[in-house]
Image 1 (tube, rainbow, N blue to C red):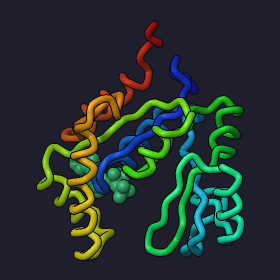
Image 2: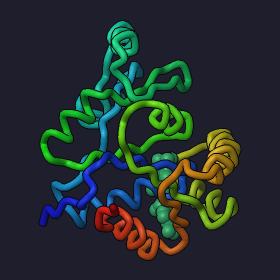
Image 3: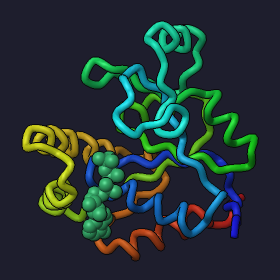
Image 4: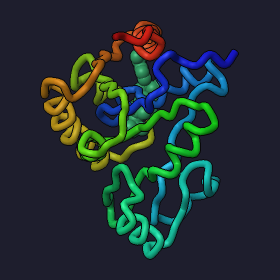
Length: 195
Ligand SMILES: Nc1ncnc2c1ncn2[C@@H]1O[C@H](COP(=O)(O)OP(=O)(O)OP(=O)(O)O)[C@@H](O)[C@H]1O
């Protein structure tokens, strides 16, 4: 059943790669169908096999991406590996208008940009129980090569340091036991409005 949470602000989920963000919010999507929607990013990179425009990404030419930046159309944008990625204000507004609570899966630099924008959001950080566990999850997922694993682990330290900065995140959840972490996420998202 679609039961929207009392607080309808977009939810920004961040945390190191491999910590279980996707696993956790996919559980939320399964258990509350039609309630939440993952924000679809814009990118200038080419679609990979099986990726659909408007579903996995909005695939756009560089010129369109730059026009969107010039028109202040993004809440956050970044460059990775020579390709640009961003979350457009329009995407968030369109989904919110349909009555859905928008979930944004965003890395640290994007979180900083959203915090500097005028977007009202809730910020959740997913933390690993330890760097050793994070490494074993990244390896266990089997999607990364050694170089990519090392890069993600190095970046994880930056993300974890940022999560310690007071008042950046509204909620920090340690993803040790999956079901416990999920319950904590659900409880936070569905908590009654305060004040
Ligand atoms: N609590 C948990 N206990 C054990 N394994 C877990 C737990 N949570 C997630 N995993 C596993 O860890 C791996 C990484 O999870 P996931 O892909 O959801 O991470 P992510 O944070 O979304 O990563 P990325 O940012 O790279 O997309 C997956 O193989 C997943 O099944």
